[in-house]
Amino acid sequence: MSQPKGISKQMIAEAAERLRPVITETKLIHSDVFSREFSNQVYIKPENLQKTGAFKIRGAYNKIAQLDEASKAHGVIASSAGNHAQGVAYAAREIGCDATIVMPTATPLIKVNATKSLGAEVVLYGDCYDEAYEKALEIQAEKKQTFIHPFNDIDVIAGQATIGSEILEELPDADYVLVPVGGGGLISGIAYAVKQLNPNCKVFGVEPEGAMSMKTSMESGHIVRLDNIHTIADGVAVKEVGNLTFEFNQNYVDGIIAVNDYDIMESFLMLIEKHKIVAENAGALTIAALKNFKVKDKKIVCVLSGGNIDVVTVSAMINKGLSSRGRIFCFSVELPDTPGQLLRISQVLADLKANVIKLDHNQFMNLDRFMHVQLQVTVETNGHDHIQHLTDSLNDIGYQVHRVY
Image: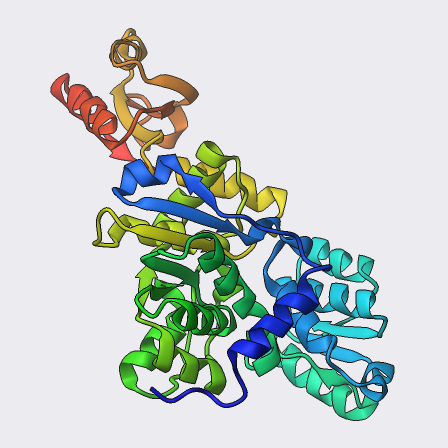
């Protein structure tokens, strides 16, 4: 196993010392709920509680703090639509240098304002991250600023590695560490640090099925640029990983797990409901991975990488998570337009203790409105078995149920 150039245990120790006065301490949380559900001892590393709401402050601060005075005088620049932007802005403010952040024009206003509030100059440019990145390089060349890469940088990776050190300081006999993967900087640092302290501890990355840039690259043996990405986990929606992070993953990562968006939604809901923890979609990836992780009675640490999510998205994710876990059931049936039909449906729902949230009794949804009426009902349910019981009971009395969600 060859060691990637420029990294060492000493670098990580120095990064930890550098970060100590700046970052929030994120102690492991043992999850009784997830431990029971997944038959392992599950611990959460809550980087969603970190300053700026994500782990990115670690790598950004470690990089910027080491710049010489001339470089600080010229300032720093980064391209990001999210957590890296705020990490760089916060670090630059603390260290006392100017920061410019180039963000795609479609970046939500809440993220733009959060970055500005930390003292950075925000430049809105392009329709996607790649266009913002190219613009940032143009500005860098013009102003001679230092570019702070979100993942493909040794000092940034060393900063993220402090998370791995902290995990094993608290839980030296951890069996597995699960880490969200986007560009690969977080898992590169964590995997390197973990393997130095406990080579027997396995490190697995987690990617959404719609953005498997690292998994595809590792299976191919070379970096693969994805043509398209599609996932609700926008924080890890990266088409191409870095050459440095790819090398780290080849050397220190034991595997990459892919999860679907439905499992991410469920995990998001469970974190809120069971732990009162709000994680962004990318941050919840590691909890989603537990569902199909085929080990038992092991100590597993799940890194929650961030919690920056707007309230509207939170509401949508809760509703989708409830539906995915069988806690909300929306269905439609066609009823003969005769008295008593709605009462029959209501009686079945009452008998099976399905609480009605919404009901729409609409004559005009059916072309044959003089003979039939469409009824759409949304009910609270207790899981997929309960939904199946409801469906079977309605079928038994002659109604054909069409699931809406």
